[in-house]
Length: 600
Image (tube, rainbow, N blue to C red; front, side, top):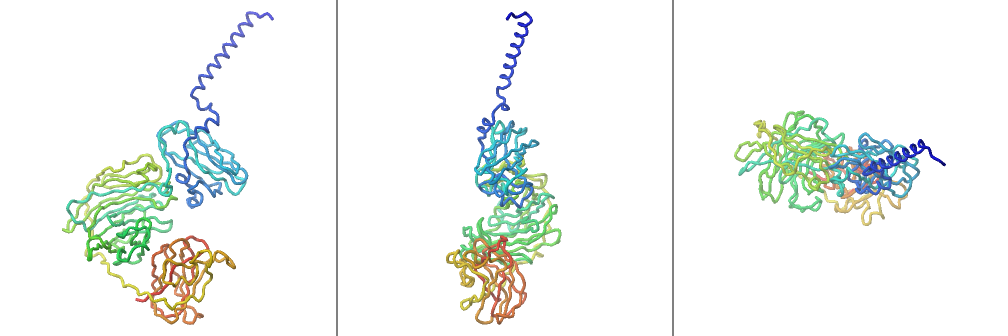
């Protein structure tokens, strides 16, 4: 075929265009991640974020204990549950995201959101498989979260997520998240202010003021005001309905279990204020504990006053007072005597911590102001210098959402919430001098006195003559009802749960015959040192095991320490019945180590 000049011109032009297009495409392809295949991006998911230490159900906090576990996201049934996984980047750019996920039954659709961008993936299969989600943009360095929510499901569960995987340019710098020790990682970093004390002075009193701004009183927060070398004193948010003023003193005996403390090392209660609950504590050292249930309010300023001075026989007495604007007067919390210690107040500090991992994604902040100490020479000294420190969670770099320092004439501390700007640990800070002397009249403070000690009655001839059930197989040497009165706090009764003739749930009950009538002023209870602690009980008494008089309902604390329940007036009786109505864990099982009665 003979080509005309016009045809040749068209072919040359077409060839030039094709070459130019190919050259342009090759040029654009160089370094363009958008042209990477999904398999390429899966291979770049080189960072594994474990949900167990970094994820929260943010809109249904009550689900965190069941949905977020050490091994990942499980028991996920609700489509409206919003799960966020937090991490921090030092660089920006593309972020690749994958989910190592399985679906027990059927197919689920999951939406993943970062910033304003969302992608949906369909997941099925009973084995864990890494599913590529998509490419997202990280525009600023700092903390970010990956939000996951179910869109649809065919089975009971949305799915299980073992790990969340990330990669891409945004992860080429330093990437921060909790890699281990998930319990403390989820609680978040604890922060402290260690005050500079006057030199060469014996400090007898320590005064501090705490204000929690509105909206910062997050459940699980402990705004500790007056810390000292042997204990701490501050206020907590314990639940939606309960707040406490807490004062504790450590035993000089080093143990995590208060039951292990020898008698000569135990903290002695010298006295306590009205409505104050006292007992023992463990897990972070052990010792004496006291608290007042008080509905303190965010935005109000509360005053804390602590006294510490040597006592007799190489011991030291520590006494705590609390002033609430709602009451308008100083209230005694408690006074404890610590053996094998002879000192005035030392190592004065404050701290802010979160003790509920379920709320570790929510920021909280406290203001600490007007710190003063009073020495044995009768002089007040203002403390306006402090060193900011933090715990191992912060120092290891697992969590970087912490801050503290001075703001005009107050100190402040902030933690949790995954905010970006933090404060260097071990830095010194100085607030402005206030000159506002504490308005304390020491002569008007309530002086604690030693309580009248109860006499516990001998149980040698007692017998359990009735019970709703007992466990004779599943608890080994424990479980039988007779162990409730064997004078051994390490043994326990347990309601039947294996080889039972029926399903036993609350209420449970125990009937004891003391062999003869006794006059009693109260009952003593020792919860099992483990699970299945009882919360609500009713006590009844009788002289014939037939006609019963109810003495009322009482609440037991979730502790294995001895708990005395005082009666309004002395009662004489031979039989007593304890009805267990509810448990702290809200399960149907009950357990108790020991029951007794006492006289004064």
